[in-house]
Image (cartoon, rainbow, N blue to C red; front, side, top):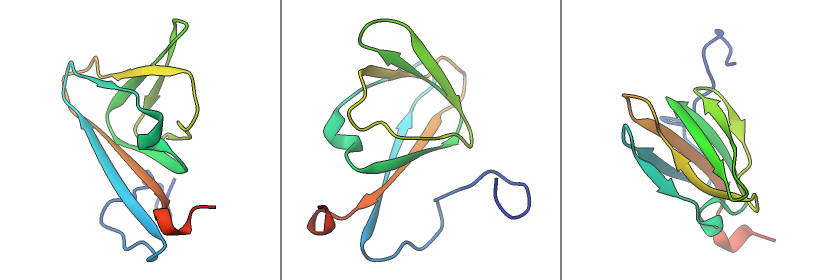
Length: 100
């Protein structure tokens, strides 16, 4: 939670030059295929909505507004929005030139 008890948000904030922000919106009822490169070295925040991570071996996990996660290298097949509102995921990572 943020200072005022509000969920943490990366949107609308200035990041240091060494970092970049990537936003993914999953429409209501939509599915976003997992591509590990998209999430490499990123901290991911569910800015808005509820998303289900669908694992390659079956099963899944539900993440909602305010949840912070790491998706790099996980056995995730897809991300599914089963709700009636868009899901906004925001990934913050180091710029390519700064990655170790």
